[in-house]
Length: 284
Image (cartoon, rainbow, N blue to C red; front, side, top):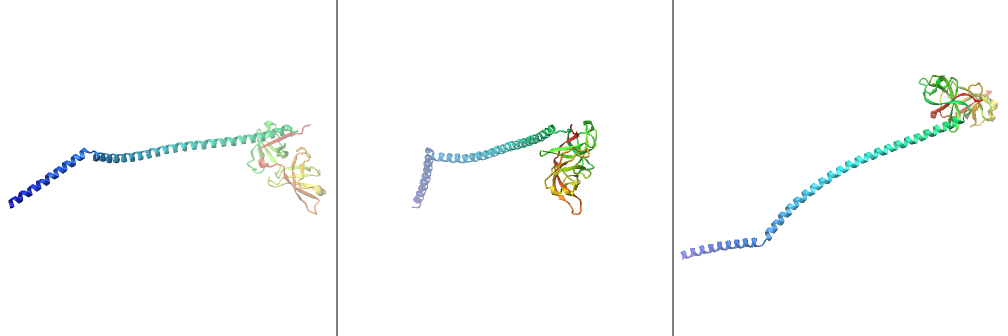
């Protein structure tokens, strides 16, 4: 009996091996007869490689777009700077054109005045200030070579009015020195344009201070008003008669004195003077 049992176990083991081999063979046939597993494997590989390729493409595209954007930004920055430069150039040209137009208007105004002036005159330009007397005398760009002489009166045209600016105190060959009306050493015989009372106008050393009309009789007090025009009287032979000096801005007097003083606002703004006219002599 024991011997027969061993044979039966060997047979069972052989059957198991045979069955396993048959199942493995059948599975192999099924695997290779159907392509589903292979296709799935290929699909998995394709998906994997597609993902990697897609990531690489996305990264390279992002880098390319960034480089392109940087290049465009540099180009735009250059164009922007060029536009700013052009705008600045146009603004500079516009300012220059406006300045030239204003200068032409001023010169045309002075030319029209020069043509209408009844005195023989020499048009000049203020070219500087006396370095030894910065706040008073000024330099004009013509001298003896052009007919300028000492004690010639100097007038200017400003705000539609001709007015006395001063007189020549030194004539060089090509430049001359003018003492302005507001100088303390400048004395001008003057009269009230309407009331006709006469006195002496003198400066106080600064264009910011009023001129003074002194030695005016006290009887004139009732005939004087603020705003009255004061002109040159022509007495003394230096300044022609009728040239405007300024307007009355204040009246100074004391009861015990026999004369009064008037403060005058100068007809000229000396800080804006550019061109003046030196008078040679009054026309006949």
